[in-house]
Length: 268
Image (cartoon, rainbow, N blue to C red):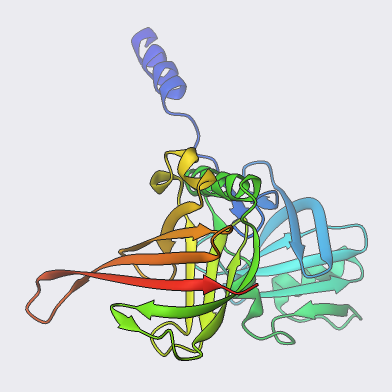
């Protein structure tokens, strides 16, 4: 019996409880914490910081209810705790919000302040909750944005494309905008092969901060699984180069590396 108790104690020490705290990847200071039954969230102009409870409705749907002072949130969960199908932000009695979650019906007046029925699809785009491991990775990536800011690169620039994948466009008005934020690089042009590019900084690809000070930053290309980029921008010389590398599988099942290079001038 003593050996059994020691075994249980040993396992409890070296197998800590898995955290059920999820962070809003758009702004990591906001979260839902199922371990401590609390949420601190923001959506548009609405903020809430209060206790949460899970309620399974009469029809089998699961809701996360966040209690505020007079404004409460009702989030319908998907099959994952950090993903949500729908939301309601309401003003009224909290007991009525609980009843609404339980029976999916209320005959008492609750003022609906915001809902996905009013802003279809926007909620899913805005809230993207991540676990602790993803939180640490995103935090590291966001630090790269701080270095980009320290290097004086954050801003919006009007650009003119003069060469793309070996094709010279110098005599044509191929114009666009380059935006550098703390999170990503965005390029929008009237070049058919570069109408919109979005790249997110990756800490693993920026191990030498001196490169960022020289105007070189790298990251992952959004919406693509195996694609990275490197942006080299020289503010003084008013020019820059975007290089991307993407790994694709062709019809024969063979991996093919595609490399693209775009050079541009900074006009403003």
